[in-house]
Each structure stands twice: as C-alpha cells, then as structure tokens.
Length: 507
Image (cartoon, rainbow, N blue to C red; front, side, top):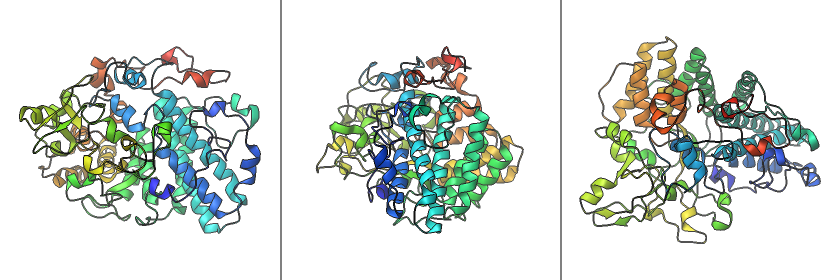
C-alpha cells in the first residue's frame, strides 16, 4: 500500500482523532487542531488523502521497532525474540518468554496501531456523505474505510478480547467515558462492515496504479478469517472458496499460486498473483533515526539478519543484521527435508562449517535465521537517509496459500467437502513437489507451519487451535492466560477501561 500512499500527503496534524503524534494513546488525544480538521475534506482529493492515511497504518512500524509480524513471530514456537541480549527490546522479550505484565510487553504498540487506523477510518466515514465527489467513488471510499476498520478490529479482538467499540469520532471528554464492549458485539461490527463493504469494492485492482488497495477478494479473505476464528466453519469455507476458486487454477479474482515457491519472496516480485493483501515498502522515503516510525522502508529486513555477518566466497549477500527472530531448533528440524527449507531458513551453522561466512551469535542464538525477509546487500540503499531503515521488500499480510489452507481447515473442522479440502491442501504441496496427503487437521496444521513459516501467522494459529499451551509451555505460556495480551496501562489511566482478568483485572 505504501506505493499508493506515497502519491498523496498524509494527514498527521490535520485530523485530530487518531491522526496526531504516533506516540499518543487514542484515549489521550486532546481536542486540539479542531479548526483544521473541520475545514478539511472539502473535495475528492482530500477524501483520497484521508483514505491513504488509513491505509498507511496497515504497515505501521513503532518507534521502538514493534511491528505486527515481529511481535507475533517472537511469541510463536518458530522463533525466539533474539537480538543482542536479554534486555534488547524488552517488550519483545516479554512476549517471547511469556513474562508479560501490564507494564512490559508489545501491547501498547499493537493497541495504538489498530486504534489509530480505526479512528482515521471513523473520521473519513463521518465526513464522506458531505464531500462533493462522484457517488461511485464515494461508495468505494466508504467500502474501503469499513473494510479497513474491520481489519483493525479483528487484530484488536484477537490480541486483547475486551476492547472498546468506537464507530464514530470522539470529542472532548467522550474519550474518557469509553468502556469495553462484549466481544460478540465487536465481531458483529466486523462482519457488518465487511459484508457492507464487499459489494462496493472492485473485483480486482490494477497492480500498476492501485497496488495495495482492497478488492472484493481482500475483504472476503478477511471475512473468512473472522468466521473461522469464531468457528463458523460453513460461512468461513464459503468465503474462502470465493477467494480461492478451483485449487491450482486462477481464481475469479485473478489469484493463483506462483509456480516457484522461491519467487514469492523475491524483492522485485511485488503484488504478484498470489498476493491478496500486501504491505508495500520503499527505499526512497529518506527514513532516518530521527523518526523511525516515519520511514517507509521495511525495518524487518535489518532486524532479522545474522549479527556481524561476514560474507565469504560462495555465500549469499545478506546484510549484517541485528539478530532478531532466530529460528528455533524445532522448526529447523521439522523443515530440514522440506523443499521450502532453503527459501525459508538461513543455515549459518552450515555456512560457517563450510568456511563460507561468519557471524556473531546473538541472544538465544540457534544458528538459524529467517531468509524470507533478511536484507540483502543488493538492496542496500545508498541515497539520502539511513540505509538500515530503507529496505524495499514488501510483506504479505494474506497470500493465496494461506487462504487455501484456511479453507481446508474450515472444511475439515466443519465436516464439509473432504475432497475439496484435499485438493486445496495438495495444491500447496504440489507447488513444491511434495506428494499428496489426506486432508486431516494434523496435516493441515503441519502444512501451514511449513508453508507460512516466518510470515506472522503461527501464534494466531496455535491460539485458534488450542495448541499454544503444548507448543509454548516450555517458554512459559500459561493456558487460560496468555491467549490474550494485557490492556496497556496507559489506557487504564483516568478512563473507564478495565484490565483483563488474566492480568489482575476484573474484565
């Protein structure tokens, strides 16, 4: 979406609710700048700018480096937090080793990201009816705003369970009177927003001019995930089936599996046919240390590479990174003989043993690193800005193999069409040259882990399946507690919000 975003001016400092400093809590926003906000949205271009501002939050990267994929990966059994030591990014370490407290963890950043997006969407939805612009364009902007609001709420409810349900901009003291909603009501709004949005979204979007904008396929994929999370298996399977089409062929929305698995993560292969929702990054935003959250470069690329990497003859051109998200020995062992291993894992143990490369082991080092998003010298930016903050590789939020396997899961768990479930599962396997297997839930779980390793899905999967206590018990995960994050302390100060009971609250 960033390529689309860069064509317009972001509205930070213009919209008062959700569009002020990235460091502000949405419950701390003060009614300053009201005149600017009230005088904005005079025409279609300003409405477009407001829409761009909502999309911008999808790729949000916090000042302390928290991102969705970094945080949720560190919390999974596929990675450790890593870094330079046990005190390196303590909020990340706390989720990785399950020492979370209301004061320590990534919860403030994840809460802030999603409510920032919601408040931007609420402002635009309030303003759109009165903006002089074509009704067709207005309908599309409304649909995108609702779908994005649903996307942000879906993340919030999976992280926190008990969250405020805010459907319009708040003014004055209203921000201190907000209470948490019944989770069922939050899910109801998510479903309503997506179902209302789908008819007014385009069937497809131009990868040349509108890459990253929501299509009907994007919204249906999110809605399928929402239904699956609630174990509404029939509805989930039906929406995924619309997105997926005939397994192994092009879907009605133009999606298809790429023939070569390794091509998925080529930096230049952006917005390919497998991409359903993709976060775009660029090396031309001149990002620097003065405002990490302002860069439009992919900070994951520098964070996960081997520390002090030294490239010898015959070694790949990885950038010396910071050693975050080292891959666990368990994942490396599970993937060892899988065709996706060389596209997923940097095996520094082997490179060092062969005398091809060197590195400095970091915290929780295993010798294995995530290749999918490791920065390369060939993509190092040499222009203005800081090269560490200006890598251009995109990140997939949803891709077709993900929705294939989710539909297979919905079918198997819901007692649906076993033949189709098998076709979906085995289309993913066939792409990498693996023989077919039966469509059991255990085979689907294993395939999701191997296919999507390092892409930020694993923690959500483990919690949805009820497998997190077993998979993460040795990391400190406590069943009935760590399926949710604590409400950030900042949000409890002088508000009516209550802490989740798992962290000493009453909610």
